[in-house]
Amino acid sequence: MKYFNNISSVTCRMANRIWIASMRKGYHRFCRSLRNTQETQETYLAGLIKNNSNTQYGIMHDFGKIRSARDFQNQLPLTKYDDYLPYIEQIKNGNNNILTGDNIILLEPSSGSTSASKLIPYTKSLKDDFNAGIHPWMYNLYRNNPRLFNGKSFWSISPAMPGVQTDSKVKIGFDNDSEYLGTIGRFFYNRISAVPDDIASIQNLEIMRIKTLAHLLLAEDLVLISVWNPTYMTLMLGHLHTHKVEIFNELTKLSTKENIHRIRKIETLFGNKNSSFLDIWPNLAIISCWTDGTCNLYVEQLKSRFPGIKIQPKGLIATEAFVSLPFIEGCDPVLAVNSHFFEFIDETNGEILLAHQLKTGRTYSVIISTAGGLYRYQLEDIIEVTGHLETAPTFRFISKANHISDQFGEKLNEHHVQTCLNTIIQKYKLNPEFYMLAPHHDEYKRTFYCLYLQDNNYNTDHNKKMINSLDILLRENFHYDYCRRLNQLQSPELFIIPSNAVNIYQKEMLNRNIRCGNIKPTCLDKTANWHHVFNKSE
Image (cartoon, rainbow, N blue to C red; front, side):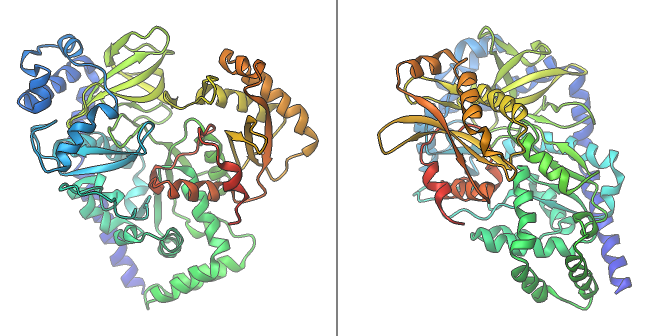
């Protein structure tokens, strides 16, 4: 058994080193790009225009006459997803040369704001542009944390979504999350991953979690956990106790002569009340996940389960574009300067700026133009610039620009709601497991905003004062205050969730056909059916 483990460890180390070495070129290219953001962006835009001048979209907008970023801005309008619906329909019918000169290899589903779901076109060039961000990120991460070479990694796995009902002649959706890593990345992923790739094909979330956890428990040499949402991991860890019988049954199925010692050790650790997750995975070095916005609460919960383990904040990565990447420890993620062409709307005065023109301390909304055929596309992510790495801006995600709840014109936005709730949490010394504000219509046809809260130590004596404080804070929004004065909105109310709020929320999001890996906690939801959802039993 020792000989087998040694062979397995050597294979894993070799696979890690070869994989990371394959990213060296992308790392150095990115480093050069940081020295001159303006030149890098101009070069990218020139290539984008040249490659797509003869497409239907390029001809319509006179790509052939564009000579500069200013020409590009003058000739092309700002766009949103609905502007692309006619083109997407043509692509689904198998037509080429519509948005891009490259063939569309698939349409990736994503949740939408005005549409129930969006289909984002992917080309080989777009996948290469994603890798232009992934490669320097991974190369730098491993180079600065050499312990990562010595073990296996866990990259978040989303259960397969049910087939999209469409007559599209183009493939709909990646088969699993690892396809973002590219061909070489997937090859090595299967050799360094603690969890087999085929588990992603399981559509049942509970079965997928049980099988994933069984494989993770076998991975004593687990060194890296990379998930999008921190709640993904906390929910998984909760299953170690609530589904212990099923997980150990799965371990029995996976039992071999080589891993029986590990399974017995796991059984011993589970029998010891003083055991921690670090006893299960003693070699764990880094957890990578979202940390900005509402995710900050759930990061703290993750830290409590893995004390002392380094948390690496993920950059801003959307289905449409790879926007930023963590690069320097202690520094906010930096713009992925050679992945796409970027513009930014200044939230203060509406001025549209280029990447090299951004100023520290200002907030901006992101605009992207990509090799997937989205041009001057408003991503509607609000960022705050926190500094610069050489000539490239560093920033943190603040909120979604379009994340506004508007029942009667109150226009509550996520950023303001988050600020209000942060004040409430601090003032009343809350320690929430989950919180979210959403509108509710009661049986008397009254409408008010409800704070859905799970806090196992909450003191109900605070109810009246806390809700009154929340109302006062929300009324700092002129439009909300006006709706309150007109009695269109009643005073907020509180809904205490006894347990499992995060799990219930995630299941509801899955029911809305949002991929598990794309589910991100929010402090504000625009829909009004949450009483019904949280009243359901698990």
